[in-house]
Length: 394
Image 1 (cartoon, rainbow, N blue to C red):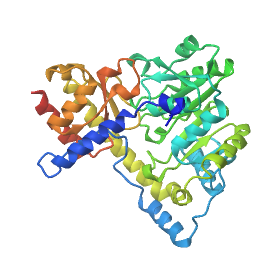
Image 2: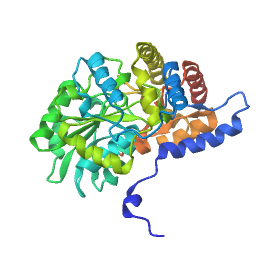
Image 3: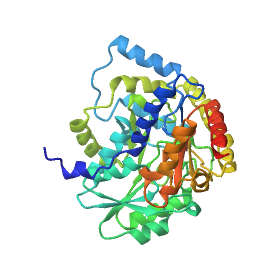
Image 4: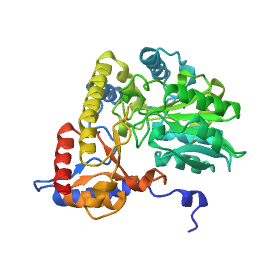
């Protein structure tokens, strides 16, 4: 059977490959005094709060499970619009919001709507691997631009200008970012968008961790710049609905019918049950719970990252959002007599029963030195992981 060149271009998702190895080992050590601690997957340990679960059960009980329109329930689009008004004091009309089958579907729809074969999209290196594969799946080319700690591991306007060519179609940013948890300063983001606009390009920005911002300096949506910015968001992270597969796009009004046409053909609609459940995300009781959980994520970050630094797992930029730590494992790996984050990840998995993600997935700009820790696990797990890493380093 001949496989398409498009499929052949998609590299394995090594995060998941490592996760499979960790799960296999976890089954072997499950009943020992050191079960596996998973700090490798970016999934909140919190699940959907009570009102959301009740709304889902009610939708099933009442039989409100038929298809919705491709752009999503009008009531949900209005609730998302209201969230922008309450959280960011920003008017984002519901008619510009398209509900999607997760942020993945949002990214696919945006890329298919805007990228021609051979178009190049600039992304920071490191960045979330699936984002570049969405570009590739649309027959575009993802161009990874190396970034530094001094740049918060984000693109800058100067670098966008320097790497722009006749083939460049635009940029795909993420703020806060996976794997670094860092955001783009609002003034720099405006400068990037100015460069892109002047070149006649598109600015796509992945904002799925926006709700999990811990610093008011960075915790602002790029939609405040103008109505030409395209934002991708999700109910997975801040709203703790990972497996519900629900997200949204905010696009210029003229792009809505294009996205709708694609969504009708590719997805029909996002899960109706998930949409009805998500209406309850915006109730005052649910928002209060989400804010309590956000404070817990911040407390984990505030405790865990100094511990990593003390161990010699240097985190060069304090994350201002999400639940990740991007740590240079070079010196720690040398203590273990190994080199590189790939071997480090498997060594800590085998010897300490702590699963982490090597930098291999996220690009090539010195990513072999870095590992990504997820602080989406409980404080107790983080504390136990630190103790095991300390013992490993002795």
